[in-house]
Every structure is written in structure tokens, then in C-alpha cells.
Image (cartoon, rainbow, N blue to C red; front, side, top):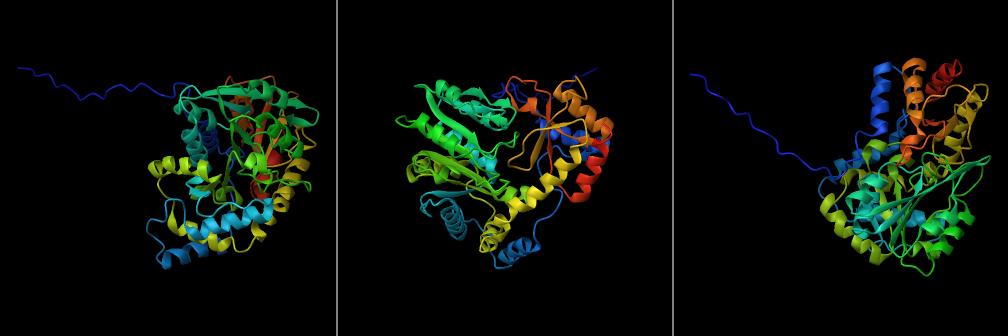
Length: 392
């Protein structure tokens, strides 16, 4: 007699993110590893942090800073953040009410969106847009409204008149990113004034992604929203120690915001991560006593930018301006008519240098014939990549 065995079944899920799959960064990094390519795709350094920073974390562990910290972050780190912002941007945040340490910048950005965006609210995003913004808006029940940057002879610019036209009674939030990933654009004082004019007299909030704040080149300054009182009064400002101190895998960042906004932020924060790695907070706070590492970061990365740009000048790639971040965008229309994704895959598998298609930063996958390289790499890594790219 035969008996039938009924296998257990997994109930079906209805996805809340039907348009989302594996990120382009993961796909290209996997392809780069399979192809043995130099990975200039995903934005992380291939060099280590300062030993003194690691020693500071070790000392914090040995001093038994290993239990839950305050939900808002270790007081010593929040104080260091307040002091840094005051020194650089002239804005005095309240250490207890207006700073929260986060598990990296993505958690900071997502939490900010969740705490203020309600179903049906519109959120203005500037395309090309970092890939975490729109899924977070969607999960919150919000409606992303995209305004495309314009590309001219001087690079990408934000068309503020179009941003103003996108703002209406349903608009809850405008998200900006400066220095901008992927275009390397840096917003100037005139941009901040244009944004101020748009939101003045409205209830629109601002989320300012400033994770590359210490990577601004050619003598320019970073125009943090914190510099501008009218904007700071309605803004969540997010930054990342991972980017600043070459420790992207530590996933430690922070948000600064007015007390009333931060109170809402912490309501969400306490129920999605609650708190952040204790010894790393204490180690970073100790390391921040010396401002030199972040004050010298622009020169450190500008040298790498110039090295990479000089190496590409004699190739068929067309360089776009790179005023900030550690990314370089290039046109490839003199090389290929492939789509950006196809060209990035070809570069990775055939030339053995991985890049990211800029089309991945548009909701509708806009084709511009541009890919993005990351130059946060050792000089020898960049030299090998340039040798290979010179053969294209």
C-alpha cells in the first residue's frame, strides 16, 4: 500500500516592494568577484582605517563598554558630534534632545522617512537618486515625486524651479543629498537659498543626506543644511562615520534635528534598532578628539580623484565634473552604444573593471550613456584599473 507524504508548504507573501530586487551594487560586486575584476563599482575603500581608531575601540571593549548604551547614543559621542557641527557649521544642537546615533546612514534615512511620512504624503526626490530612498518612501505609504537633475557642460545641476513646481499641499518632505551620489555634484550656497525660498511658509520638511560631507574639493566648503537656520529648523541631517573614517562595515552614523522632530525620530528608532554598537561609539568619540582626520580628508581624496582623472584623460571616456564624494562619472558614447547596464557588465567581464550604471539611480532607468567609478581605492588598485581602462 502506497502512502502519500504531504510536504509542508510555505504561505505566499504579498510583497510591499514589488519593484525591488537585489541591488545593482550587490549584483556588480558579485560579477566583479566572478570575473576577477578590479571593483570600482560599490562605494567602499579597499584600504583600512587608522590603527589608532581600532585601538580606541579595543580599549573601549576592555574598559567594559559592552552593554546597551543609551537609546539615543552614548552621551560622549553625542557631545563630540555636537561639538563638530558647531565648529564646522556654526549650529548648536542640544546634546540630549537633538542628536541620535544610528546604525549607519541608511537606517538614519529610513527612520527619518518613517517618522514623518504618512500614507498618501508626497516626497520630492532628486534623480538620479540613491537607491534606498524610494523603497523607504514606499514602505511608509508615501508617494515619491522625482525631479531630474539637468546635465550640461558644467555637470549636473538641480533645477530648483522644477522642484518648486513639484511642491504642493500633499508634499511632506524634500530629500537632498550633498555631496551627491552618484553625480559628485556639490550644492552651493545659491542652491541652499533656492531651497529655502521653496519651503518658506510651508510645512514641508527636509531630509539632508550628508554622508560625504568631508569630501568636497578644490577649496569649496560643504554647505550643510545645518549652516542655514531656516533650513535647519525643519531638517533631519544625516551623516556617516563609516564614510568619514574608512569603516563602512561598522555601520555607525547619526542624525541631527530640532527637538520636536527628533522626538518623533526616536519613537521609530527605538523600535527598529533601539541602540547602536557600544564600544564602537566610545572608540569613535575618543578618536574624534582630534579633528585632523576629517579636516584632512578632502585633500586625501582630492589627490586620489586627480590621480584617477589624470589617468582617464587619454582614454575614450569623457570625464564629468567630480566636485565631491569619492565617485567619478564618465560618458562612454565614443566607445559603445550599449545600454548602461550592458556596458557596465561588459567592462566587468571583458575589461576586468567594475562600474555602476547611472541608470540604476532612476526609477524609470533613464539612459544617459554614463557609468560611475569609485576612486576610494589604494593607488595600486587605481593604477591597475587605469591600465585596463586605457585599452578600451
